[in-house]
Image (cartoon, rainbow, N blue to C red; front, side, top):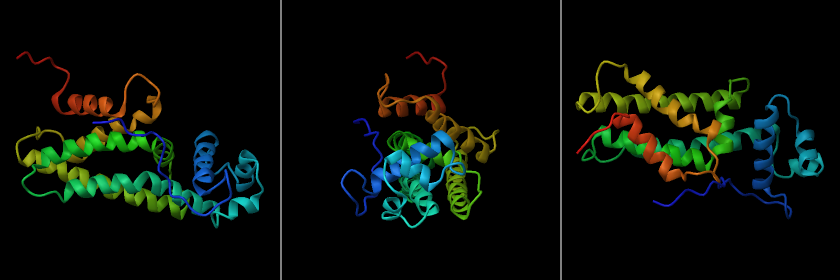
Length: 208
């Protein structure tokens, strides 16, 4: 499998050369990750880009609208990954689907690392943030259902609560935002393979 392009494929809108909607969104995400959403104004973003505030409003109607686009960038593909795994044909076991979700979630995180980092810092201080948290809970519930299905199949141990297993699995995935670098030693596929192997097969050596 080829490595995932680390540049987020953010929606593009109309815009001026060098400062289209995608460029404004990338700058906003970077600024919010450095300084915090609440502490950053549209004026701060305009200064970061070297433009006027009206130039920002040429692309978005408000700071909250910009936040919604940023969080959607993190959530939309994760939602697709989980929904596809949940709706796969019954010829695939819940265990197989769960492994696919873990693997693909790593690739999504790498491809959308700045916006996922922002998502993980959301605390529900605005309606946009509350909606993002609701969508995260939906993901957690669907993942816990896959874990429960894998337990029922006998593929996973049954002495750990499924919702806890789900949180631990995706705690591992989410930890990548703290240390993964696209220009580092490992590409997304290698990290995804390794994380899935550790999560599902453990670190114990198994000799042939």
